[in-house]
Image 1: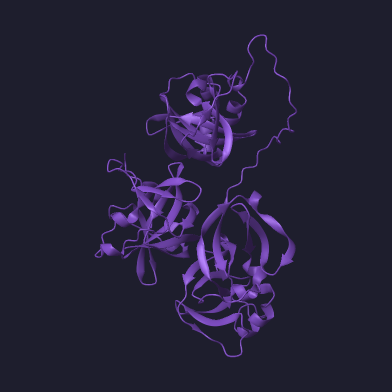
Image 2: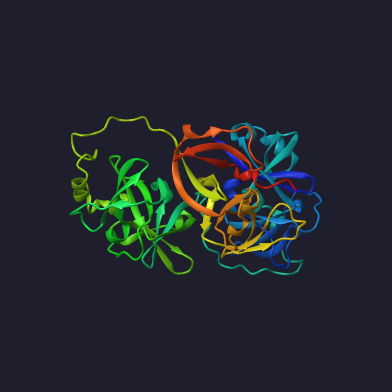
Length: 462
């Protein structure tokens, strides 16, 4: 069986583990609306993550004592969402699923809501059975003696198998006045271009040739290929690889940031559009077309081949097959004079700028709070942890990288977001001794060393 990723939390004197793919988020509790005829474990209704859902006292369900207050772990069950009130979230761990589930009988004997238990670091963890919890009798709403509850028509029950899908990261870009997106797996690098050498007699959409670390790469105007016009200088491009191995640079007006969306929110285009295969809705009414690089260049493939006679697409000139090497997508950022990298799969969003609200000096874990549009989150300011000669260059509205840190959304402030790079796995060199920042590896890029941050260790001990 595959490994299980678990979110661990403290409730009373027990440490409870919840499968991470069942966790929607970890939030503070909002205003509670009690319901009549409900049990003590069913505390009422609360609004969390934009939904109204039941708030459950997990300690009461497990017949243990827990102090008042705490935090809410929002989970998915087959009927919807539940907010479990726990004392605190403690960690995230990965365990062998087969080995853990072998202890199912012992865990059930401890409590019917446990589906397994395991030992780690001299501590016992109990794996919570979310589906059994959601149907527990102690959560039912019952009338008092002599009262009658009238039946109400309910929608058909959901299917037995709940399909859980991970969210897909998209890079948002601006072309003219419109917003588009590229799936991050189709982008090898986000790059700020140097000079572009024009090609005489080339079509307008072919901007010319650019030098990429000593290799000539064709520069294409994404806007013109979509039927739009140039509105800004062509200096931001996305490097992508087309079928056959050809690498091209697709220029856009501006890179806006990174957003993640569930595949269920991605819709196919009802009417074909060159280069755009599907779309999603951003916010309430902003339609964002998802650009497919393969579809985008399909309309000009013949002209593209004529412009590059040595390209491997030409029949009879196939390059020898090369061994596929594992690649990691790395977001590079600048803090002071130092370059740092963060693995892209840990990044939820990138915001161009935020305003930092300082916290009291007694709050040592975070440097402040920031409004990210759909909520206020704690942030860590890396700029305070890297020595610099000129403190006047610290912006009051720095870029913010949003990530999940110990089960909740948090922000990381930097001086500048640079690029997204596909880096071969063998270029990551482990480090033993580093600065006070948690650095696991260094990667040589263009004559500089990029220090790879371990995001989970950025938060200092309380």
